[in-house]
Amino acid sequence: MKASYLMCLAFILVFPVGRVLPQEPLKESKPAPTTRQISGAFEKTITKTVACRYLLFLPEGYGKKQRQWPMILFLHGSGERGDDLEKVRVHGLPKIAASKKDFPFIIVSPQCPEGQWWPAKTEMLINLLDDIVSRYDVDTERIYLTGLSMGGFGTWTLACEYPSRFAAIAPICGGYEPFLAGKLKDTAVWAFHGAKDKIILVRRSEEMVDAINAKEGNAKLTIYPDAGHNCWTVAYNNNRLYDWFLEHRKKTIKPDNR
Image (cartoon, rainbow, N blue to C red; front, side, top):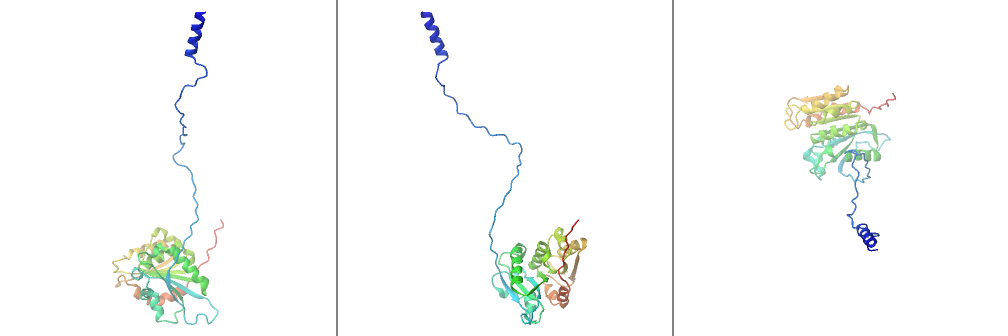
């Protein structure tokens, strides 16, 4: 009897019944990524307000007859930035229009805010253009674009971003990225630059014109041999420029059905 009791006791001590020994908590394992790059997608609706002040010139006879008028969007240089529109009248088309009431174009001359520059304001500019077109008698086949210095850069930039909107452009002492110039192969371009310009070198205009023509475009460059940076004075006093604008209408590009 004693032997049996001892054996049973030993069994109980070695294999206790109904008791759970404490264990380390289990750690959840993460699956190893199969690749270091995964696909994703992002979408967000953003509401944005754009605004600017501008001068508007309406030619003599506007509103007296049912007709549509050609329009020029003019971009001033860096010295005319701010919130004083009188600065915008100093150079370029606002100055020309002030002495020529019979100037045959609607002219829109926006003002760039202080500390900003036209190439970064293309969204505002194209929306301003759309607003003017919606409220005035604008011939949408004869919308032209020009600008000087900073406005020359703005002219190249805006035209490259919206090439189908302009029948012809005239950037003066500006420049842009030649590898984007092919976008203007269907837009008439007449660029101007002073050979003695030390602020914006003449090669900036040459590069753009050459790149457009390399794509079988229609671009030309007038270089004034004795002019410096302010070559816009002689360029805008050239009546041939305005005749040249009126010779061009926006081309209708047929879709490629291949």
